[in-house]
Image (cartoon, rainbow, N blue to C red; front, side):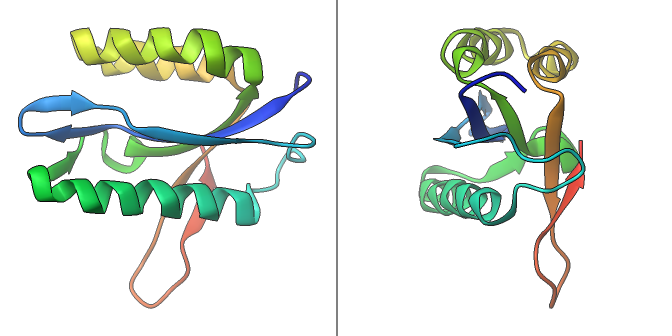
Length: 128
């Protein structure tokens, strides 16, 4: 992965009939080894984002917009986070073209994860 890797957690959701794409991120000292999961950093980012969404649910019901792929963790270069990701986000919010968003996200990163949980078990990462 490129210099200055960045781990970003994003949620594709709908609330009150509007698409939303909240996100959070953290700079990494080095890339996450291939085949590994994002570990504690990934859990912390996901927890932070999910808590923010939970608080915002006071403003209306929240629905996942892309099923299991509605909560993603991606490792990408910092410049993509600053330049390309905002463009993809705006295009999705404007058009709702989820396939174009997913294709664009896959081009930004070679490494990504979904996050799932089951009753009485720890959240787990799956390669995206």
